[in-house]
Length: 96
Image (cartoon, rainbow, N blue to C red; front, side):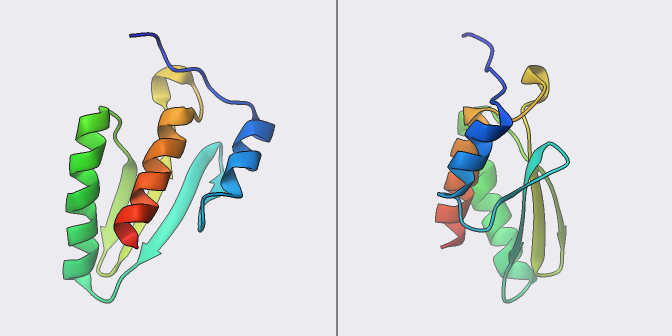
């Protein structure tokens, strides 16, 4: 499998128009998801973990009570790739 290629900032910003809630922060895709309670937040993380594992692409994330904070980047590409955009889209779908 070929190594993913980091996208240019203009490419990323164009894609962000289709990714509700996501922003470019510190060279990573960033979003905070808020849920009604801890169980819903943890359930979201569990569902996303299954998607991420199938993609072999794992988020940087943290959870405090009802909030899940996510940063996406592809470390071996040195930036944001199509994998990050695909995972961000999948996370939005799970949250909806």
